[in-house]
Length: 114
Image (cartoon, rainbow, N blue to C red; front, side, top):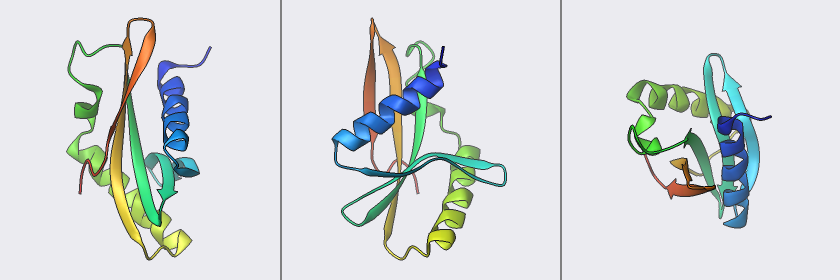
């Protein structure tokens, strides 16, 4: 059985693809940093952090991205940009997923940080 976090990432990928994004990479690692999803749409490179929670009891999932995590994502994104020789625009998004009854709710926060 897959974890809710893994299921959340799969839901996020399906959500992004439905919105017309092309998934370029999942779980991109650079040293100790990781980016959940790297995708593109209309010439824009997007780095996506996925936050999955079983409820909003302790707050909305999107509020669980710390400044330290943002810094880590930034470092990994810089490595990806250099590796791919990317010269276009970039954006950092958060996709928050939480259980709402028997289903999962997906929220997309564009330009979430930096």
